[in-house]
Picture 1: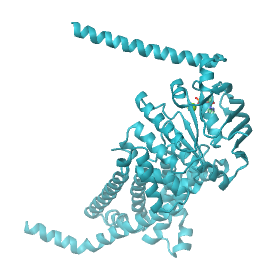
Picture 2: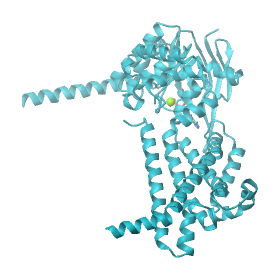
Picture 3: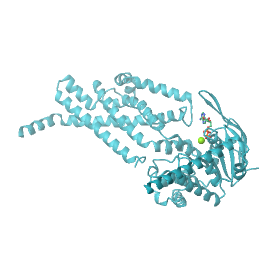
Length: 229
Length: 270
Ligand SMILES: Nc1ncnc2c1ncn2[C@@H]1O[C@H](COP(=O)(O)OP(=O)(O)O)[C@@H](O)[C@H]1O
Ligand SMILES: [Mg+2]
């Protein structure tokens, strides 16, 4: 028993700070990239919904342009996107490695995913309710805010938890090219130094973070949903 | 000039298998404070007609004058402003599911930038009017169909409308609830200057509250006049058919009732 405690103590002294920093960097990348992703992806998703042929402002040209852009970005594997974006990242952040730099490709990967998530959430909103709002003389802006976003909020929150999980996964992949965070640690120690124990521990942490985010997201979604009693 | 004038209205839909003429050359006048019924079988074009009145559907051709204003000349803000005075009630209620009953009734007033304190007060008053003051904090999913329609009626009244359009407002409700909703609409009409247009496929709805009726069949207006006139002396085959359906329904209801009674008696005798 005593020996185990000593071993843990030694492990903590050697890797504790490293792991804590890894968790911090992972959360930093995931949350910020998702946030920036929404700044780009949310308006895109809204525009997709409005300009769809069943939407309230059908516009085939705008819809098709956005649709194609999203399909292209979504079909590029994340690691390749990351490498393709190195010049952009360097221009924006000044370097192409480390957690701050990784936010750039993560945001670019998250935005189209978010746009699709938002689009599918907003399209679930009952057409009749949109029509009722139109019949009341609501402006398009009000319909977007109060009807589309208001009625889809539960689905939007669920979408956000899915996005967070995906972005966290991408952030770990970025570890291959020194992207910072837990994935970076796993690769540096596990792959290059064969310290399987530390890799295992980072994996446990990654899974735990995903679980916590998922749990929180579902809790918020459930609390905000008034559609069922 | 009549309050609502529909002149040579046509509406075609482009569908996959060609074009559908939902409304064919329809001429109709509705007077202020009428409770005007439009009846016809499913697919007759009733919904299309009523949706043209607030431009939810854009007419293919023809003119719609409301209080002398050609509504198709209205754009943007002016159209929205006009729509605020034309309330609409739907078969599926179309309430905002994520908003409380009170917030649903407040919604049209938000659209019209009524101050928040005034909104709440008026919404509560309207909920009292429709007999749902105790449900203000409830959500639509917690209400029955009849209660949902009452909320929808309170919501429509929140705009102080000149016209209320009802598209099959009672078709999703059981007969008893239908009665109470129709009575509420009648009461609202009798205590205001509101013109009511009621779309239905049910004769009973027309005979219970409408003063005038128009019969629509395959997009064509077959006849129109006072309810008594049209129902007592039907001139079109379409009207006769609708009357026949009504009579058979009543008969079959009677037969069912008699059968039930007979069954009960048998049970008692046994
Ligand atoms: N958006 C639409 N696109 C194509 N056809 C439509 C559309 N809306 C209605 N129709 C057609 O127009 C006709 C009249 O429909 P509707 O006005 O809904 O009838 P009702 O309300 O009397 O049942 C029907 O044949 C229907 O299929
Ligand atoms: Mg209909």
